[in-house]
Image 1 (tube, rainbow, N blue to C red):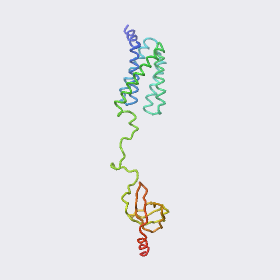
Image 2: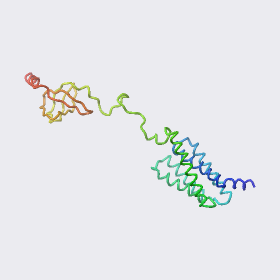
Image 3: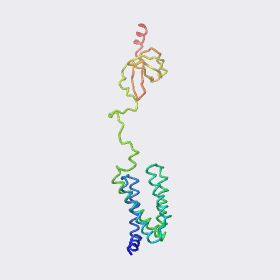
Length: 227
């Protein structure tokens, strides 16, 4: 008698719809927020009571439970081994297929499942807006800003070279190499040709691009006479 009453209660359309809501919301939020299994446990409990009701009523079979279980395994695998949503979609199909197959009336089950999905969708959207800082998507976001103030540089900062003089090691046509501050540096002119051994001065630095120009000819001639 108790089992009959329990079966009648669990298979009632309202109760069954609520159990489906709990199951969908619990598992979906677990996939989104990774709550150490607590939400998933609640979701599985909701589905388990749904299947228990129809099993006691003589409608659900072990085949229906197997289809549902396969879907659950696929969702768990999606957490462990991300498949870009493929396992999630297949798992959801198996879950919902098992739910409909276990019911005494597939059309009524589909209606209950549709209502549960709509309510669950609203609940999931509210949860995402409220706890968006804890979602699984944050694992793929680089939160720390890589700024120079924190010591991060994409390229060496050579702005200190502006105004420094040196000597062209190779002819600059317009690119070449110069010795500046005792360091061999790849440089480029603004378009003019500068012979090797001529004095140059850094006029601009843009990232790794060091722009130089030739120092006054008098200094180059003086340097050439002293050699």
